[in-house]
Image (tube, rainbow, N blue to C red; front, side, top):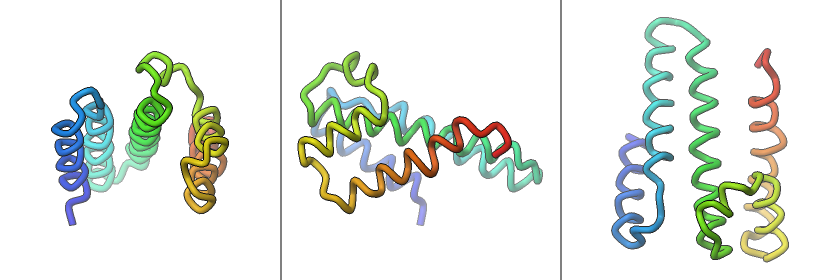
Length: 122
């Protein structure tokens, strides 16, 4: 299964339905992550995988902020000024996501994003 192709098609469908939703940068991050992953495998250089993690984090957070912008009826600037934890708290306080989904968002931020962002040895 070509996950990147599937995501690209979904982004196109979203763009067709809502032209004001901007997910092109998300796709760019995912395309770069795929490229770095393939290069890392080919040349055997684990440093490329750090770039994969960075790019996938950027893609996730970009899509997260776009979701917040739409669901909270905010401007692009307002959404971009929010931290991930602020958006997560908004989704929780407004009961936008059920507990199971919130658990995965918290897990991403606490167990994955924070460590990959702040642990220079990772």
